[in-house]
Length: 360
Image (tube, rainbow, N blue to C red; front, side, top):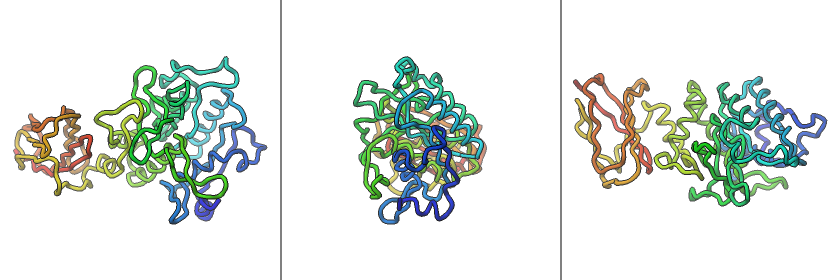
């Protein structure tokens, strides 16, 4: 397939392993994984550029596309263990489990509590080993199951919903929350009319959370490469906090579509671009002694303000979560050390960054 010429030429395919049947012809079993890979590693200039075309990949098969039995969850866990053993940093899982050919092993929505199914347990353990685990939320909202699928329900897993180019939820993208009310899916990405490599050799489009998950997994790989000293938990947090719905998450998109520029600012506030034009907020006094007053240029009335104060060495020295209002006051700064700080003000419209001179 032309989308993968660069991966092969540059030795970016590190290997393959089949956990279903090692005797099968690995590359002839099913086209689905191929299309998924193209969302991340595809590289046809002018036609298709995946979100992580310079990453290295292990291709692991755990799904038997000819049937649906719960042993495939065991295959998934074995594949995750293998991924850990060869040093994988990020797992993309474009599949999910609900009901099986043997109905006695079916899951129910009650099992989608983030910790019950065997595949979800395995995914949580993988995340606990320092890997980012992305899982498709499922394509079930237009059928009887309706809800998220395992392992996207995992407490430590990043469940990814599908949206279109207008950030509207795709009609099929599975709904949350987890059965215990926990926010699921976590985030969303392009999964409706996603550009990818098709099985007939052409570049085209297709629908599914199977494609929104790798789109985001590849973006996360690029983000993590920029900040390799950060942990998987810190990268996951930055992705969620940069979502366009972070101040008002819902059960269809979670925190919404991550903004990588905002995520970079959250991971490295000292490198954040100071807002100088088209400001939504006026901040005074500056220099600051005991308080900071934020005045909205647009008389903002709804939503939530997520405000963080960072030292230039990256330490967060204070944070506030406040209801939006035309004027907001941040008090009790008397004991904060003197020096230059960065104030990040996040609303549902985005993030603005201000340089603050704190004096005694």
